[in-house]
Image (cartoon, rainbow, N blue to C red):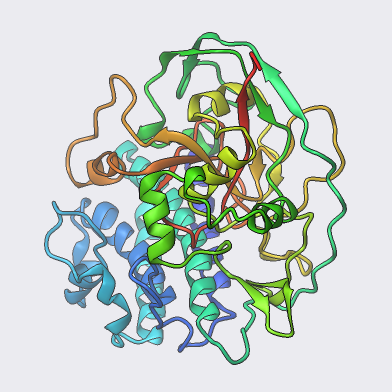
Length: 436
């Protein structure tokens, strides 16, 4: 077996094991709940990521009889692949009480055994490529598993249960926002244009299709804030009537904020004994909002309104990528094995004169709509539905978050969500035109 093939096998087992470690602190009841249509139960995440390997690797290899002992799994755990066939409606995933957690654990073991047998055989380029995609797909679901169960646990009004028992250490003041200036011009954007020191294609030569192809973009002189917006700065926005001033908001965002009665980031709530003091639900329990930590769980609409209030704007995804080109992907990412990891963005630390918090902590909303790059073509077949079909009505986020698995983010990575969504770790970095 070649070194690359051994690395792929190790990666497969490591990724699959991490999913089970992330689910381990949760009870069977925790893993069953679907608290809103965007949230999927933990049990579903564990089953769907397994279904991916069963359908696209084992099934494509003609070995599906190893995994289709329960043919209904193909219906229950297909997410959105029209080419595969019918599937259970997404908003109703929490109604599927059976198969049980124990049966899903058996399903995972069954598929893992078949996958390892297949990978131990003669290497096959197509199988290896799809397996690699499957591991990155599962890493995406590891982050979703955590943000989904965070929402689930926040629905418990009595105790505000914690996923992990970690005490928050008060953050240090990161200092006032500074600005780092960049010259514009015609710049190359996308995969394989100007690789980072370790290569734009990171783990085992992988990148998603939506990260390319390389193309030229015209940028004008601009500046980026040297760190993410803090909770304290967001409190100032609230105190200045930020959620009550329609002139700050995009029309769609204003109507959404009014309809859903937004008055703060998701998971913030006022202390009933002291209305001037805000509490926040986190994966480590309910605690006071720390003014020096990055704000997160805000929508694109809120991020844009804050930027307008601050006499700034959001960066385009091209400005963000241009500014990060050639930098090491270093930041706060998921570290579930650390006893003091807070499953939450960390403070920026003292000013350095350069950009801070580029990777990790919170995904950064950009002003860019999620659209195909010039020359993009979705791959044929069901796998082609992975990214391209969603290039409508969504906004791009860059950088990664505190719940993103390590090694998963890179400078060219394009995350995307609908502009009203708030349950993921969306944060804010300001930008401005340098001519000011």
